[in-house]
Length: 404
Image (tube, rainbow, N blue to C red; front, side):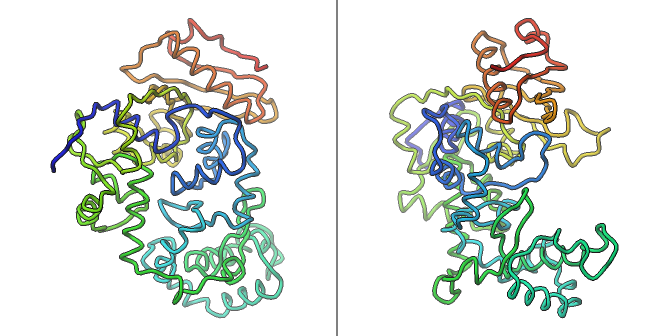
C-alpha cells in the first residue's frame, strides 16, 4: 500500500464521526428530510425494542438530529421511504437498497435462526391460509392472533401465527408496512412493493455484496479492512478484492494512521483532509449505534472497551442493563446506566463511569450536562436524578437537576 496521507488517531476518529453525522452538533432544528438523510448516511438503522429510555432507533437519530418528533420514523416506514429487513441485524433500510438484500430473501435458509425451513414445511397449509387471509382482509400484527383458533389468551394461542409471520418476513413474502405502538404490521410484498420484479430489478448476489461493501465504506468513512464485513454481517465477503478494485477506481484512498497503521478512506471524505477537523458535538449514544455496535472496532478506534449487557444475566453485568456511551468532542469519555421514569417525568441515571484517560475539565462538565439535559427533555423529563457518579463530577453537579 502506497499511502500519501499520514493521520493521527484523533483525525481518524474525526473522519469516522463526520461520516456518521456525529462530529458537530446540529446547526438548526431538524426537518423531516434530515431523518431520511441521516439514515441514508448510516446506510442502516438497527431496530431494538428495549425502552428503558427511548428505543434505540429513535435514540440513534436523536444523537445526530437533536430534538425531533419520534413519529417521523413511523411516517418514513409507512410512506415506503424505508423498509425493514435483516442487515446488520433487524434494521430500517432506505428503500433504494431493497435490491441489495433481495438475494437473502430468496435464500432464507441461509439466514440461520431467522428462518426455520422445517417449520415452514410442517405448516404449509396454515401458512397458505394466513397469506390468503392477509390478501383478503388486509395487514395483520402478531397480536391480532391472540385469540385466533383458541379461546385461551396468552402466547400459546398466537405463537404459531407469530412464527408463521416471522418466517414469511425472512422469506420476503411479507413486509412491514407500518408499526403501531412499535409492533410490526405485516402486509404482502406485492402490496408494499407493487412495482418490484426480480427479473427486471434484481441484481446478482456478487453485485449486491459489492454495493453493501461500498455502503459500509462510505458510512464508516475510514476503516481497516477487517472492519468492513460486519456492517451488513457479510460472511466470507471478498474484502481484499473489493478494496483493490475500489482503490483502482479512485473510490478508496490509502492512509496510514497512528497506532492503527493501514486504513482506507472513502473518497467523499478526502476534502476533509485539507483543513483541521474540529469535533464540537457531545451526545449519549445508543448501545446499538453504528459507532459502537462493532465492539472490536470501538476498542481499536476509540479505545473504548464496550459490550452490550442487556442480554447478560444481571449478576454477570459489569456496568448495567442499557449502558449509553458518552461521546464528547470526538472521543468516547464515559458511559452511564439510565432509565426513564415516565410517570414521574424523570430521567434516572443509576450510575455514571468515566474512562481512565478522561479529564474532568470545565468544558466537559458543561457539555455533558447539557447533552444529558437535552436527552432527558426530548423524552419528556422534567428532572434528572443522578444516583452514583465519580467524585470529580459530584463537585460540579447536584444529585437532582430540574429542567427548564
